[in-house]
Image (cartoon, rainbow, N blue to C red; front, side):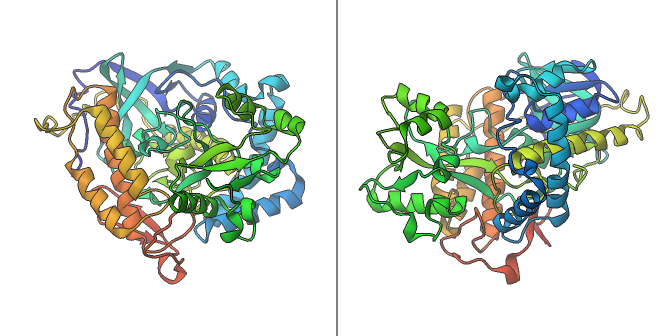
Length: 506
């Protein structure tokens, strides 16, 4: 069993930071939560890298501004993609409140050419928010069933951050897969820390694999938007054959899971490492104007997408499952709130549609901030001043025949992609689960790289365990040995919790 804490510590012996609110993560959800919490107390926001000043506030908000008919259509599309696992109240809350959230952000909007900086700019105006960059959250500190903040690795030193309320908004986990649209920092740290702290984890088998991740050896983590297919881009295999008609009546406009499965199948049939997205029938001016970013990126590598095809393949994109929360972003651990990609509000069900990832962040980020404020009002002002929290484990076991950290990470990524990726099978999942238990790295335990490795192992094991349990195919979870959706048995959520048996929930 994974250790409760992955670093030895005694809060009485480490540098200590006190705050009212600890926000972990600087994406849309974390920024929105910090801005809300700032209205009531001091906020410490920690981020794994540097502050991201290109928050995607306006990337996908057209649908909620399209009037009542647009809202109804968006709700229907959300439920259809969710394959029966969407929480109706959560969906309706998200869509309804997204209108208000977008309206509020619009009133605070910077010039049109800088709209992607709205939340970072708003954060800079908050007088009681302190940001610590390059701070790695190692674990969440708990005492008697409550969360009191976290252990953070700052300037190569462990620190204890004591907080009256903690908001987890640490983002995704796509980098545990070999093929992904996510940056290298997305190693699932928040998921792993929450699980070790005893949180309920829901629907960990559901990961959205984006169908068209750019396949250029020197240009990782870039996806080609679904808008390209909406505008008329077609998919062809290595033989130059258009293939989507074999898989779905909507062809290139089919759901993401269908297209991802089709691409993987075509790659296997042709023995090629990718397929191709063909825009050459579109007008060059349209391509250069509407898809300027992907045009410029490809052009740097000698590909003119007005006349050349774009090499693409499926890649891990968005984690649908995560830390289970209610509509107020409350987790099963008192004092801990979660929002954004790390949380599972069940708004997406078994797959998500464009726009909903952003809406979820701003709506439930705000709700997390408000819920944390309500919680802090019930906490005595000095309740955590004299609490001492220590790790209860011995030093990590190291084997002389372990593998190097980077090699171990790459092994996990390759194994997860091949065995727990777009297509899954019980035999592969069981073998993966066994091998994950055997992985032990050599090297200095007190390093970001080794903490990341342990988190990747923990999160991968959760995904594999849930994928093994769900003996059906639904949305982004596809089991080759159980290719049909089974509502009679599996129209349920899977809950995993450290030290307890898995359970199913309607």
